[in-house]
Image (cartoon, rainbow, N blue to C red; front, side, top):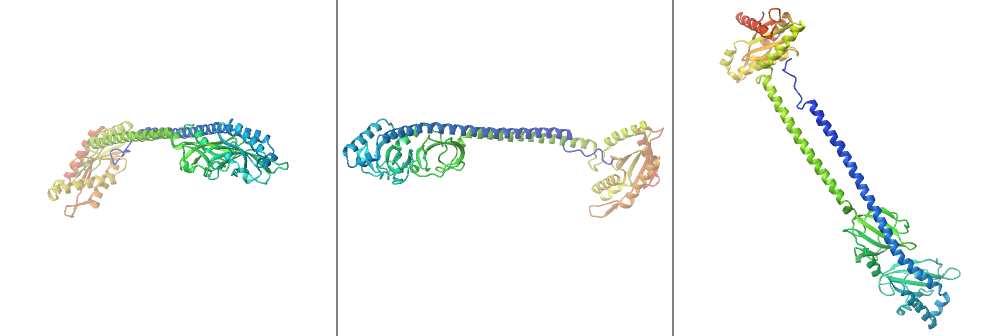
Length: 494
């Protein structure tokens, strides 16, 4: 082996596996938590949508009760008059007085209605609880069906103050009186002041950025909580996410951006029973998800902290192992050449010789010395001498086998442990190394001049007389001495 030990990974595989498992568990836990957070978000939104729809239905039922009560009174008023009575009311004070008195009596039974009266076939008031309205043309739905076929049903519409008979924005409930052939011949009309609707809708407490709205069949905003007077009476575009603002009797819920203030809300809407009025309840989406978002933030912060802590532990562990590896390398590696030092060479050599003795395998040792090394140091300096030592170590690693261990004993002396090698084979390897040094290896001085050098090699092998590493090494050292004595640049087998 040309290097004392194989180069180790910067982190042991076993520990990498442990950290890998920890990381995988962290990823799985993170994915599970992310899924749980997504499920909890969907659950929060679903619960809020159900609450918005329930609140909308409750409010529409309450407001619808007022409309239905008013329509019930209008039905009773219509049943007590005829188209002929309405035609006579403008000519016969007695008829007008009777109808106006009826309107006054019925008005007293309605809590939120501020006006009540009869219209003729031209949609003009001919009798009213407030007689100041007599002779004024109504701008209700009935005015649009004069002389036309009508359905016998209640109609609800919004009238702004500019078109209102009493000069107040109102929600009008009207019921036509048809002729025998189904054409409009007059009707009864009740007016609910928009202030009453606004006051009623404001009795419901809303949270920050939540909203409640009352909308008619044409999408006109009649009342809004919180109050926004600049939008009252304007037609709103139906929020994206639902089919349309209108007859959704069973109600629906959805998420959309408000056309009033641009905030995203969870909406629930439902229509009042039998009348085209819709209650829209909206819960602010950001506020709904506020606590959930805090959970997400805590999860992210905790995850980042955990990753940082794991990273710190991993880095400290890695640095500790790296320092340990450096200390281990310093204990077994010669710092100048990078090959085994004397201690490592002795430890591994002893183990290899013992194993060869046990299994009766051949093994040999080479003792190598640089010829006239002192002269090299004295002539070109110690830096040049160090380069010569490094060049020899490199040549040994390149020339000898991968299974052989090369090391530096000290100074200019080197050794190599050749496993499974008999004396003849060891001599061949030693001579190959000697020839390579003599013919193909040189270093440069500080001035750039080449320095050629040679080596002497002593070879000794495991035998019955030499069965330990120290014994074989001693014989190799004796053979090296003999090689020097014979004139250097040669290989001598003990």
